[in-house]
Length: 243
Image 1 (cartoon, rainbow, N blue to C red):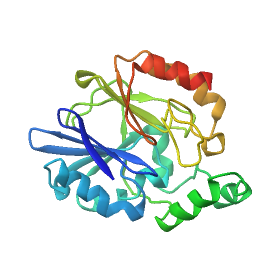
Image 2 (image 1 turned 135 degrees about the vertical axis):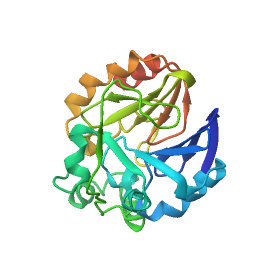
Image 3 (image 1 turned 45 degrees about the horizontal axis):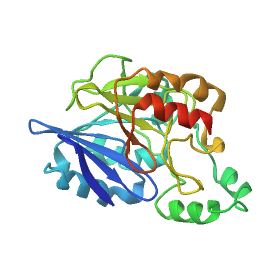
Image 4 (image 1 turned 30 degrees about the horizontal axis):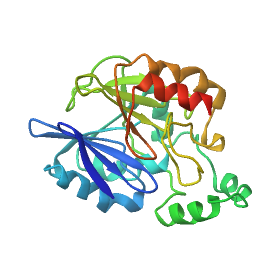
């Protein structure tokens, strides 16, 4: 795991299988996403590296409900962290519906390069689980949140129905989740791209809504997969759509 302060109080935790972000400001701490269930020790370590206490996390902002982004969610909620996400994502977080690739989806593609190795690796991290919480809170699109650095939710449905990016206007940062990534364990290329289509709930909708990111004032992209990218977000979107 690499944990880097990419802007003042904004820490990017990058692992080979998924990323998350630690937000620290005036003694307060929040997370955006939280890895696989088996990465809980790394989540806590990333918070400590930021200089904060994992037990003082006040909020967990989720880009979406997939297990590689919600692994520590039940534990953090039990410790008192508010769980925030796009309104359309709440049924999945409560366990009422699932919008994710299944073990069968992966098995049917195991012949493809990298897929089998990736599938076995994430299975050991709890990749077949569906973490849930009882009372997630919806975020309002375009309204800054009362958490460190006041992230602004940007709805990007397609990967899941309630997928949400988070814009940090003062830092020129956008946290894109899986709507736009810069790499993935099963991808043969690096740079701005959409994650493999079988992971998406609605690929056509994703491509239609991705241009919303291009309207933001941001030149540092923190994706759900792949390294951080220093590039105007409009250029990153154009490159991703062109692939």
